[in-house]
Every structure is written in C-alpha cells, then in structure tokens.
View (tube, one colour):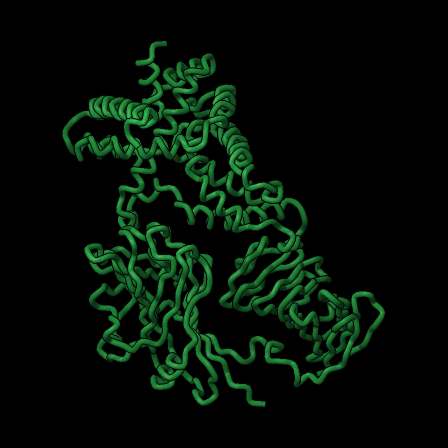
Length: 447
Length: 181
C-alpha cells in the first residue's frame, strides 16, 4: 500500500468516516506490517494531542449545559474523583455477587464518607469497613441491632450480629431479636443483653469506654481475662488490658451524639447566579467563582436561606455553617492559586432578602448587602469535603436575626491565575450524593 | 477489609493524573472513537483502584496501567463486537504490544510541536482542525452553515490534517537536529 493511501485510511478511521471496507483494509495492513503500525501509533498520538488542544480551546464555562460537554472527558481531578466513586460503586456491585448484605444504611445526616461500601441511604451493606468523615449515620444490622455512628469514626461490619468500632463514637440500640449482638473495640468487646448502650474508642488514649443507657451489657477485655456486667447508666473504660469503672458524668458529650446539636437545612432555598449568563445555573450545585479582570462574565455567587423558628438562642453555644464541596466538572483546577479563600456574608439589607431560587445576578444579594461572618480556604487540589465557618460573628448574626428566614451569600474572594479556572461547587439539597448546606447549632450543656 | 492496610491512595491518584494523557494516547491507538476511549479509561481506572495493592513501585505504574487498559479494551471490543468499525482483536494486540514500547516524552514533545504548528494556520482552518473533537456532528454543522457538502469539507479537513501532520514531523526533526530548541 502506498503511503498516501495509508495516510488517507488512517485519517478517515480517526475521523469516524471510514467505511467497513476501509476499516477492514486498514486492519489487514496493520496486521501485516510493523512499519504501518508505527505510522498508525504516531497518528494516534497526534489525535490525542489534537483532542487535548480542542478541549483546552473551549472556554470551560461554556460547557455548562452545552452539548459540547457531553464530548468532553472528565478532566484530571474529575476523572480521579470518578475513579473513587466508581471504585466504591464497583466494590458494592462485586459485593452483591459475593458476600451477602448484613446491614442497611438506614439514614445519614450530613454524612461524608470514605468507604469501600456504598454510602447512599437505603444501601445494602456487605461485610466491610465504613469510615465516616463527618456527620452522623445510622446503620441497621439485619439482626435488628441499630448503630448510630458519629464522625469521625470507623466501623467494621462483620456479621449481622457483630460490628467492630475502630475509632470514634457510636450508640447501639439492640432489640430482643438481636440479644447477643457484639460490638468489638480494639481492646475489648461488649455483648449486649437487650439494651441501648454507647461506645467511644479513643485512639490516642488507647481506651474504649462503654456506657449503658438502658438495659444490660457485659464488657470483656480482648484477652477475655476480665469481664463485668453493666446495668442502667453504669459505665466502664478498658485501658491497658483492664476494665475500670468510671463515673458516666465524666464522659464527654460525644456519647449522646444527636441530643445536643440542632441541624437546619435550606429546604431547597439555595441558588447560584452567574454575572453575565442568567441561564448558566445548575440545580444540584451551588456554584462559586471569581474570574480574572476581563473574564468576569462567568463570576458566580451562591445564596442560601435557613428558617430559624423556635430556637432558644440563650441555649446555643456555637453555630456552624457546613457546606459539602463537590466537583463541578467546570474549568481547570491547575489555573487556580494553591489556596482559594471563600467569604460568607450574612445578609442584613432587607431589600436584598427577596431573592428566590432561580434569581439572576442582579436579584441575589451582593456582599454590600450584608456583613462578613467568616472565611474558609479550599486547596485547589481538593474537590470534595466539608467546609464552612464556625465563628462568633456567625452566632452573633443569627442571634441578632432571631427568627424567620436568614440568608447567607458565598463568594470566592481569591481570583484565578488564568481564565477558565475551576468553578467551585457546593451541594444543594438536590445533589444526588452529598447533602445540601446545613446550619448546625450546638446546644449548651445544661448539667 | 480495613483501609489502613491499603497502599497510599492519593499516590495512585497522582500517578494516574500524571500519566493520564499517555494512557489516553495508548487507548486511542486501540479504540475507534473518543467515546470508547473515555469509557474504557474510566473502566480501567476502576480496575486500577481495585488492584492498587499489586503496584508496589511507582516506576512500574505506566506499564501496569497500560496492561489494564489493554484488557479493558479487549472487553470493550467484545462488548461491541458487532461494530464492524473496530479493528480485529489480533491487530489490537499487535498494536498494544508495539505502542507499549513507545519511548517516554514523545507525546509531550509532539504536543509542543503541534501547538507551534497550529499557530501557522488561519483561525478558520484551526477551527476546522479542532472541530471533530468537539462534538459528533461539528464538521457536518460547519458544512451546513457554510453551504458546502460535508464530503467536501471533510476533504478539505483531510488536506489540512496532512499539512499539520507534516509540520509536526518537520518541527520535531528540526528540534532534534538542534535547529529549534
């Protein structure tokens, strides 16, 4: 075959316009001749470079909802994030064929996971490890035992009747059907005799504490040399291979994970707007970006509201705004500075409070409409995780607002190094995986 | 089961990111469309993640990853075996073996040359050269907009691509001779 014909065939093949006969002709030629293969391999490299150039030439923001985006590959970090998600998914699928599920993920509140098991509420869990990075999750073992896990913690699911808490705090509720349920810790285990009890594993101190809230359990050291039975409101700690009785009031508040925090969601009341492009918006994400001068048309801000009703402000010790960072798939992280600073404003200008989901840039609040409550930083290498602020200014702002609807504006203070930088995204309530913004109010301990 | 016994996960991500382009070029050698390339790379990345314990030396990443991409390509091929526009399994294996021996850094050198060469085309020509990578119907749409037939625009594109490919070759030769750099 002459080189012109070969070039033409390869070209048509790469452009997707070769006929079946042409592909067959090319195939035969490639099979026969190693020089042809060299030419073909070099052409594939040129293809790859052209593909990269084409993608780099598109203003990344234009890929918002544009058909073009379907053709774009998941770029660098996105691909890796996808890799992790898919790996988790695959692990769960593989799990479906192999070991049988032993528990169900009953619910999760603001939970962020690092886990080889699926982490969507309702998911069936096979034996394996769950690492809860933030939030609270309830795991219902198929025996009926229910474990409420508080982050940061790691729980290994071993069987319907056995779990192992490697680190962190958990409250375990055991109905009659699951009497005999065992919760192990690194240095001991508790056998349940029909009760509600809590476990805290402190890795630094190398201790495990058990407290019976109601009912009866027996606690054993791992060498099973030592055993005690605990009843209502008794507590013990295992340290250095021995069991010590402790006064439950000495244990810190982590034992009652749900009792002392009020969590308020936005209930869908969150939106983002783009300066020059009213339609560039995503329902599932709250987008935030600040472009270089000259590229400000795609600046984005997000605003969210929480309804505060029936809060006794005197009892609130601290307040925290939590946002779940998720990959936006728009723009390049490499074009950002290493650290990116975000500002949270509490909106005080009454006329700016009338924004609605879907409002455009001019109709959502601006920084001038509020007070700065705090900042947080996100490294450019990170596209997932929990961020937000927990400041005195936030608490004061909430206190001053009292009741009703309060609004927050999120902006990116730092600018990009090059245009078409990564757009940061926080999950909205419609996000398929991560939970939307949460306002957490910690109630002062009244003991 | 404990994730504590697993190797450095961020290390694997870093390696994947660093070699993503090279793996993409490798997959492109074996697969007929960019969609197939992206799908296969994604499947391969999942396999890499699952088998990450196998990898004990960073230097061994690329050959290891290429092997996984090759396997996934064959799986893709079997899945779409009815697609006559795919090369035969025998050819894919020959290409896979030969492409795995490509020297390091060629891809990046060629990219620099390509950028240099693209600058020598007019805006309109550059747009046409990059159009096939933006969406499936992009070239056809351009043809419709300019009142030409798709066939004639593809011919024009073919000529431009030949010119571009020659420019890249020439640029690299000059650079190797010490004429550029």
